Structure formats: structure tokens, C-alpha cells
Amino acid sequence: MPPRTDSSSPTTAVRLLKGAAFVFALLGAGMAAWGLDKWIRFPEARASQFGFEAPLWPAFTLFVVLATAVGVRLLWIAAGRVDDGEDLFAQRHRRRPSDPPPPRDPE
Image (cartoon, rainbow, N blue to C red; front, side):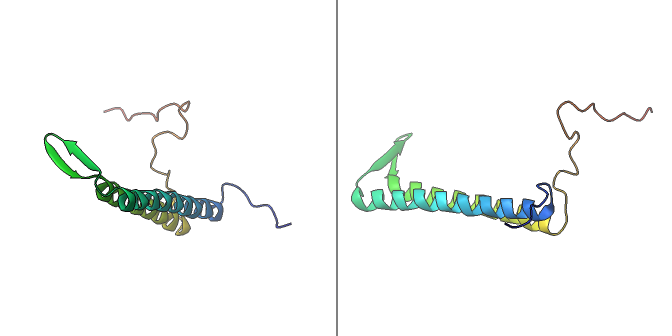
């Protein structure tokens, strides 16, 4: 059995963020494959809004692919920043909602 690591270590955070990116990519790929299947099976499906019509499935599939790419990139960048030693929560005003706000400087 491998030694247990501290759950708050940067290595664990990097693994979790990269794992989340991988899971997000799998979910997005599954949705895109489903949209592609519908696009092939039902190319005549149309979406209409404000009097305009457009093919439904190409727009859906493209949206899913782009949104998935943005989400994966965001998680991967966060993992890289944590791997470089940055504390992503260092600039937060309060660590927990129950923490009192920091004292203000009298002017």
C-alpha cells in the first residue's frame, strides 16, 4: 500500500485538478459524440428563435466542444499554477464565511 499523503499538499491538488480536467473532457466528449450521432441521424432538425432558423445539431455539438475545451483549459491552467507553488486562495478576503473581516485602517 502506498504511503498516505496529506490531502492539502500541492501535489494532491494538482492531481485533483488534472483529474477533474480529464473527467470534464470525458463528459464533454460523450456529449459531443451524442450530438454528432443526432446530427447524422436527424440532419433536418432545426432550431428557431426570433424568426431565424438554423440547423440544431451542428450548433449544439460546436457549443459543447468549445465549452469543454474552455473548461479543461481552465482546470489545466489552475493545476499548472498550483504546481508552480501558487496558493490560488491567497487573495481571498476570508478563508471561511465565519471568519471576521480584517480590521480597517483608521484615516
